[in-house]
Amino acid sequence: MKDSDGMLALLQDIKELLWGIALLSAAGFLCLIGIVIGDWGIALLAVGIFVFLAGALCAYHGFNHHEVVEHQN
Image (cartoon, rainbow, N blue to C red; front, side, top):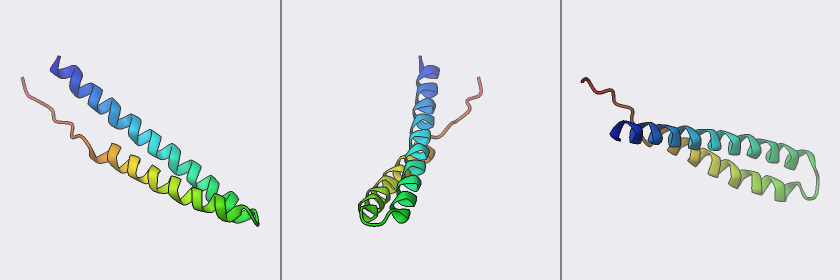
C-alpha cells in the first residue's frame, strides 16, 4: 500500500503542475486580449493578472510539493 501512496502523490503533483500551466496560458490569453481591446480591456487585464498569480502558485506547488525518493530493497 505504501508504494501506491507515493505514486498517487506524484500524480497529484503532476495534476497541479498541469493545472498551473493551463491557468498560466489562460492568463496570457486574457492579458493579451485585454491589451488589444480598448475599454473593457482593463477588466480583462486585471482578471488575467489574478489568474496568472493563481496559475503560478499552482505550478509552484505542483513542482515543489513532494519529493520522489527511491528506496533500495
